[in-house]
Structures are given as structure tokens and as C-alpha cells.
Image (cartoon, rainbow, N blue to C red; front, side, top):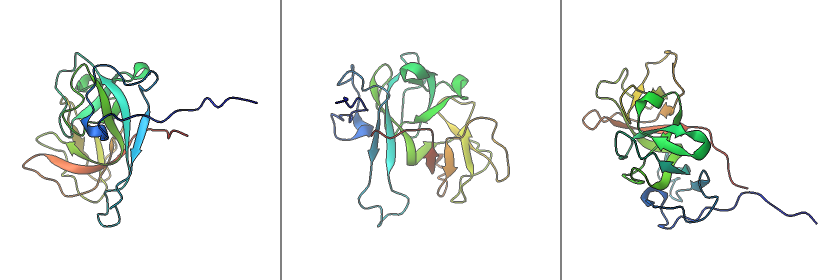
Length: 183
């Protein structure tokens, strides 16, 4: 009889992937694993469906501390280390959904589903519900939105999915980053 050696479930100590801030991973092999969270009230709130999170380490040399909507780029994809440094903008990893995990700690970034994303102060095009391309900017931890019909020079984070809050430079984006489900 053969043994099953597939991926195991990820334990989220706080019960909420957006509030994990660990000095060491809870269990060996957890780094790089994904968690899918489904909002049971999605039918009452369209656009608030499933969200996918990936367990990562925030680079201790990240130039900007994580905050809600901050863009994360891979600084070492093989070891699941992310940074907020825009110099890595060709390697989009995901978005931070809170101030956790902090620099040098382990926690989750969001890689799929609707998320709040922080934009540069002067966006190329204001995000709308029309599904405009959202791409990395040259500013640490921030994204930009392209006008309809404009080609993206860097990998996309996803598409715009709502009205732009110009005062706070944030908007909802449906993240479409690479992810795999745990069997």
C-alpha cells in the first residue's frame, strides 16, 4: 500500500490570516502553503468571495513596514521571502492585508480574490469597476492602475474592482496571482 504525501492543511494560530505575526513558523513545512478563506455572506455582499493567502517571511531589510494594501514583491521566491522594495517589482508576490506580518516575521499575504490595494499618489488612471490592469509601481509597497487598452510592462497584481478612494489612494482589486490549492 502506498503512502499519501500530499500537502497538509495550514494551521492559522489566530484564526485569521491577516493577524498572523510569528517569530518562527508554527510547524515545519508550513512556509509557502496557502489558505483559502470563504466569506459565507458573499451572496449578500458581491465581490467579497473567497480569498487566498500564502504563508511567507517578510525580508528583514524591507524598506517599508507592511500596512493594509501594501504590495509585496518576492525577494527570494524559492524560500518564500517577500519585500516591499519596488526594485523587485517584476516579481509580484501579493498584498498585505494588515500591518502583519511585521518586517523579519512570518505571516500571510493575500494572493487571490478581492483585496484593498494602496496606489501611488498620482495614478496613471483612476481604478474603476471596469477591470483596469493593476500593476506594480516604482514606489515601495504601492501599485498603479493603467488606462484601458494600455499594455502592462510588469506582471499584473489583478484588475480594479471598485471606485477609487482618491483621499486614501486605495481601491478594491481582484488579485489574480499564481496560486495552487492544497489537496
